Image (cartoon, rainbow over all chains, first blue to last red; front, side, top):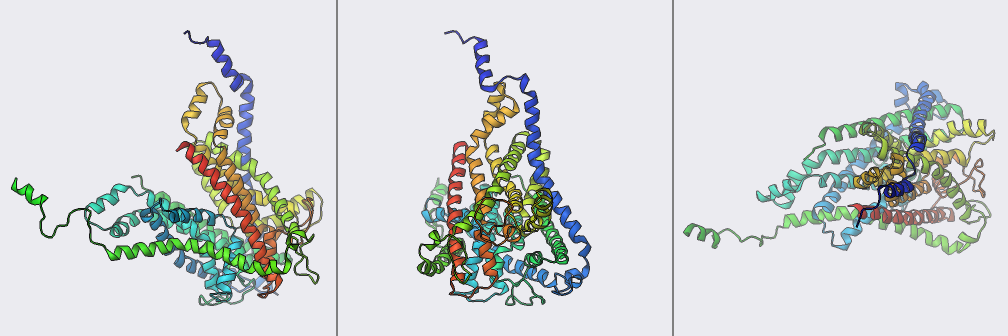
Length: 302
Length: 312
């Protein structure tokens, strides 16, 4: 029962993994190729940001943020109504997704019995919803909120709720992860002291999961304010001269205004679109930065 | 002896363990939370109901012309309702995008998972997340005002404004982070023991990456590509801004094409009155889109489950 000769082992290793020396160039080339793949994505992002900044920086001013758009004089056009509309939409959206999203996450993590088919069905359903194209949510909003059973018309609250349904899975998934990261010993300690299930969730689990939930909510809202397609379908005004003053006014938003200007063939409006994009990107990057900061600052290692 | 007997016995006011009084407040909260979770089910039901309800009169009017007509022109005086032109546009542009996104996304994933130091990964991943967060109307602007003039008009010398090439290339860049992050997750889920075994047998880093990690993570890689394709099919703003609205047949990437999503967006923007065939055609297109992406997502979920089950 002698062991196979060393050469035989080495030989078989060679055949499965080629020879060492000649592949050094290959190794370096392969690594360079991978770095190139990664760089192309990053460089394109940089080019995109620089291009937009070059196009739009000239049109940026304080009055650009407050003025209404004009069909005749591009120089005095602004994003006032669109910016106000976006803030309103965020508000409506947040009022819906925070309670509903957190409650769903709590139910699925703390109460749902995974043996039951409808709980598994809810989970599968949330996964599927996350992959439904955003324009289809627009169709849902059009059929149910704008026309049909709720029949609200093309108003802000209909647009905001459409966006809320679109980003709800983001909040649920982030909320579940945050709740799952709270160690069971905390719950058990609370229960052992006589707290009920809900007291434990409300006083122990949720506060501990709050940073993760907040991060997820901010990311969901930042996704919502960049969405254009569903708002077009629910009938957002491509051209609005007055800021909305209640959730029952016409819906309008920053990405919609940008789309309106991009569709206009005149070059002056192209630069206005770029300026609008700068404002939108600054808002988005700020929200992302807050989310990342929250995550890093409050991330607990239990 | 007496003291312990008292504890074990029925002390007045102390219930034995396990027979708690029913707490109605707790039950009500549980019910409310369940209702919140059911909102997502209602959303799905709502989507399916909306799409099907308005599609039924459409198909009653049109019948199989949806599949037998040559052209798609529901708004013309002599309307035609063949979906093929829109599918042609959708799959041509998504095809260009995926040809860009697969190598870039998988290359990035292999690098981040097998080569990058933790510090590089910590820097690059948030930047890729920014790329995910860029609104698609911004990508559309970039395709129309940067890629089309530079690449299509100057380099290829084709004087067009709307074309599939610019839209597809930019859509590809948009999909890269989707493919990269899901594939990287799958590759990092491959247990270290497999890598160490291969290194121990004298494999190089490239060999470990391509012959051990990549095959072991293949189901996650396939899932990421399927999800990437599904994102491309459902993408609206890039094509609406940069690819034009003209339904078209063919594979020439320098021509303009309408897709399922551009037709929906452009028609809904025109505020089609309820009950007209044009309005109903939005829903028929939406249904087509929903079915396509749902099928792809089901396939992707199956593949993701597979790799998670193997190593966890």
